[in-house]
Image (cartoon, rainbow, N blue to C red; front, side, top):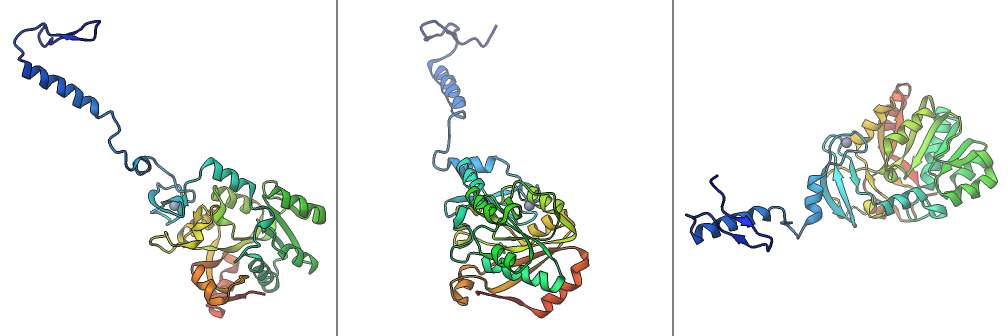
Length: 315
Ligand SMILES: [Zn+2]
């Protein structure tokens, strides 16, 4: 048997038996063994997470294509989908727990809160298209529900914050429910203002919407839309609970999965305490979206001719 260069003794010392190997050769062999083992040691200690992110696969939460690590912004790391241009952030268990709790009684009430936007969209669709049964999805603590209710609109509301739902149930009973416990009802329109960016499983929610819409039922709302480029200074992703950054393409992908078309509109100064100019600076990519069936194609073409910018102004 050739090639035997040593035998490991119980003491751990290698005793060289075979002849013909010089000390230099033996050193070379030992060094080779050590170098071979080095590949199992961590090589790059400076950017372990980047290496990790480049080696795992994150699937797009909208179109199921493979995303790529994109960038960090405001403490969250984002992945980009090259197929639908959707951006999604990593979600820790802690963040998931916060998302599931909702924002409680503080939801929708802060600077730029969406209350007036909900009201304006509801009135537009109610008055111009006669859509009468309206669901405010994830309405938070905005006054919209109460205002529409007092006006006699067939309005329904839901949210995921336990304290908020309990409070509303006392006053409006079954008309205000937990968003995870939909009643057996179909709505003419589901309005989701400043909601889509919070969804970890958006396609599950779109399916839910579809199951609770009338045959020509509509989905409408607002969110900011990603239009490309670096997001490190996009204030919209600063909110810890914003984990999705939609693009027009990704919304189209979601809409087509429930048989709807998409129209996007700019808006003036929707329900913000800031003057118009400041609103535009802070949220330049804010858009109103409408997801509608073929029946309303002409209406939305017409609406786009009437308004380049929807006149949603603060009340
Ligand atoms: Zn995608």
